[in-house]
Image (cartoon, rainbow, N blue to C red; front, side, top):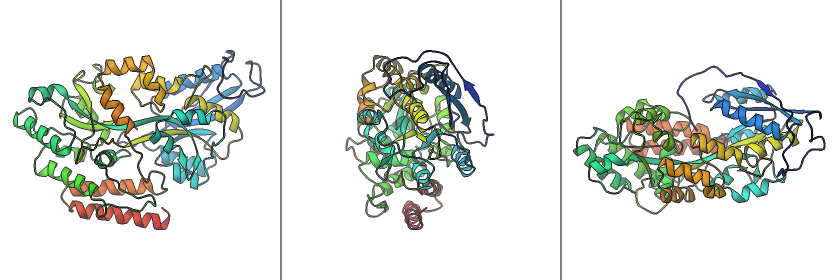
Amino acid sequence: MISKDRQAKVLSRRQVLTTSALLVGGLAVPRSPFVGSAAAAQTTVKFAGWAFEPQVVEANVKRFMEQNPDIRVDYTPLDLQLYNEKMVALFNASSQGDAFYIRDTNLGSWVEAGWVQPIDGMPGVKELNDDMFPFIREAMFYKGKQYGTPYYGDIYVYMYDKKALQQAGISKAPATLDGLKDAALEIKKAGAVQYPILKGFKTNVDGLSEFWSMVFASGGRLFNEALDPVYPNQDKTALGVLEWLVEAMHGWKILDPRGLELDETQARDVYLSGQGIFTSNVGNVIPRANNPQISKRAGDIQMMRFPALQDLGKGPMGWSRLYGISSETKVKDAAWRLIYYLGGKDAKGEYFSAKDWYLKYGIGYPFKSLDQDPDIQAAQKKTGYDLEVLRQQFANSRARENINATWYSEWDRFTQQQIQSALLRQVKPAEALAASAKKAQDLKKSGG
């Protein structure tokens, strides 16, 4: 879920990795008849994903081929920010490959377009599902069928500079928005910073995550089960959250107005440079924030419960990215073995990929049993997590209610723009949310 606000050329690197290593025993999925030696005929799987740390993917693909010498993987990384547009072009040209990354925000529309095939009943899939966090497992499904294995799953987090709170005489991180306001005003009064809360509001692929999280943490919802909007009138939680944000920026002056010019990645980097006391971002920002090679405030950043209108013990927004298989592939079994490895277990029966991503980049793992992994526990302790808070937030996270709607992405961008207009005081919060709700109704009626 890491993004950059720039147009970039598509990374068109293709690297074919081969090996003659013997297949390691104990595969969790059945071996194909020709598996067994490097001399056997190879099946090629074309695989694409957005270019986040592609060298890690290349190394992992190489390891997969060492365990599966009968399969050759042709991996292509594509531009991260423009990934959906690039993949749609490839689908339309019938050159999308056999397996690929899918954002949960795009799954519904890709399925409806006939581009992805279900994986229900494939070997080992139930075992993976039984161990997934519920909000991640939910993201694998659309209209009752499963379409992928998890690349990763994570939650949105709120964080603070614990040293700054101690210096201001604040003994405990707030759990409510009123408590956050009071703490920020105390810090502001002490002269530590002009704007204690730093947040990026520029439209981007991740820009609505804080809003969702505040609504969920407050016990509210935006849509009912029929995907009709219940905000801003039937459920007033969203209205209360937006009114708080507007007052924080213009009334109490604790929310930095520079955030209207920053996207989430830019706000993250400004925060890591030492500016602001409170912020929110994707979960892997916590390890970055406490990494002395990246952050000027390493060791001082702590995760807190997502602030809510009232403390109900709820959690924030959770999401997932997944690996899927093309509906047009001619090598389904080989493609399945690849995404089972990448989104599940290796030949030793271990969650190698999920653990590797977490230990290297703090990217959230999808499987509950990894909470007990000693290497992960050691990494979390080193990072400085409050494990009680971390476990509580993961256990109570929720998937966005309309995430599988084919019109989700268009509604998301429009709603971000409405929130920006409210923060700029061009419209009132109630007007902004009414426009967003009408947009959702219109999109649902037209089918997106």
